[in-house]
Length: 182
Image (cartoon, rainbow, N blue to C red; front, top):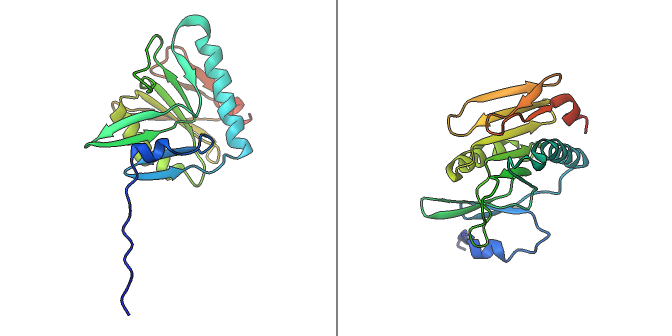
């Protein structure tokens, strides 16, 4: 009796676009990666970031805040990838290119045990390839906010009692203790 061989079928952008709207997924290296339903703490931190960043951006024209349904498109080595950050800031005044939103200048990911390696690894690399300038990695377990300059790779971790400060959004600083208590 022989062995059955199953070939892995690579997903395309068209496959990704056929997903139901309620499914939060990303297209990475020909694979549709479905993100698990966020925990209550994860969502509270996301909303805390949204409120803090929106208060800072306000009417000053420093960018447009978007949530997790914003898609970041990356084409690398002829392959399309689609990422969905938890929170992002699009450049102010930038116009969508067709159905695509402009590339964010800033993204934030709230880490969980099931996504941390993915968020710290391939997603950061792909955000950099897309032209995103800065990423914040909020780690509720380590109680830190790591600010990553995606152009240089420079990293700085902020702990409770400190204010995480952006290098690309002038004046943006978020109280880590308050954010993690959200």
